[in-house]
Amino acid sequence: MTSNGPAFTARILGSERMNSSRNGNPRYRIAFDNGQFCSTEVDGSVGYEVPNYTHSRYRSTEFQVWTTRRGNVTRLEPVTEP
Image (cartoon, rainbow, N blue to C red; front, side, top):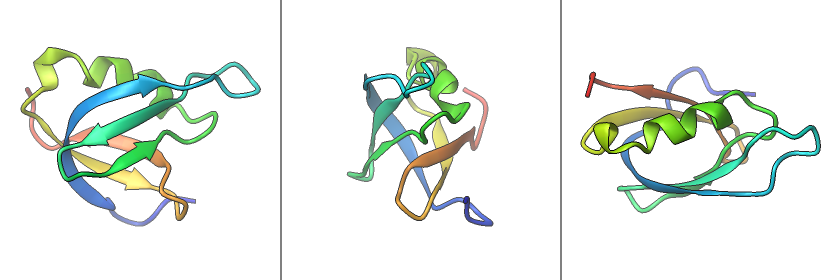
């Protein structure tokens, strides 16, 4: 379940690939510039977006980050275009 609004706004510093879900979907652990580390939601489409958003083109871009109650990222949305 996602929240009504973004949990926080931050820049992505990097990501680390985790083991795929039982269904074979990618998962990542993301480091943000506010000191938070969050994993992507299991079987969420956000796992497919992370490699694109960690590209150098997005280095200075802030993202709105939506999370579950457990803190797993369900959605990333750039605040401005890179």
